[in-house]
Amino acid sequence: MTALYHGAQTREDGQTREDGPLAAPWSPTLRALWDRVAAHDFDPDHPLGFAKRLARDKGWTPGFARTAIAEYRRFCFLACAGHGPMTPSEEVDEVWHQHLTYTRDYWDIWCAKVLRGPLHHDPTLGGPAEQTKFRAQYAATLKIYEVYFGPPPAIVWPATHVRFGNGPAYRTVEAGRWLLVPHPRRLWRAIEGVLERCR
Picture 1: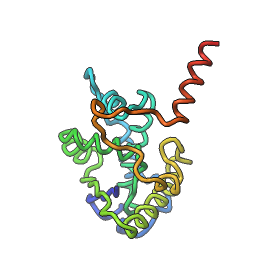
Picture 2: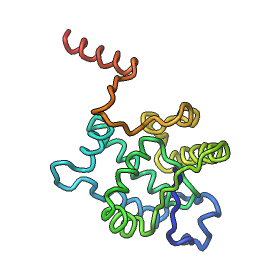
Picture 3: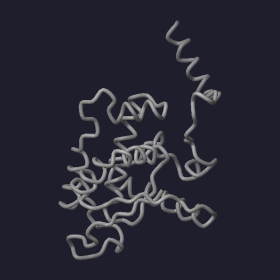
């Protein structure tokens, strides 16, 4: 769940990345990085593009898939901005997992040309110490997110106690073998939506 950036370890002011936050977050180097990240095309013209596949595989709406991809862009920028290890939200982590399966785009374009260094995904090793580490990293990620982008949207970036509350929110299941039933709150919201449209 940690993003470890193994690119150049020296900022333009000569300090190493471990020296702490930048005094002026949007340096020309970081502005150029963000411009490359924002310009990357995740959805070339294919019948089943990146966002459509993500929506299909995760049961998300196309709009939510696009939102999660936008937040993934921000996460990757933060992971490379020099503020230490970052931990994604579960939704952002799901986008990252899918991007890793697009190996040519991820390694040859995203890491090599956009980020200009490898961005490794390091999952938890399990146990209380790892839980504590990732909670602290996630809280730090939310703080530095706010410095660059303002308050993070709670729909993708829940508070730390929510993110690490009840275990993973996403699981891979064989849909042909298991009956998947929406959570009662979601089911009720869907019913209310249908009833509202019928009025």
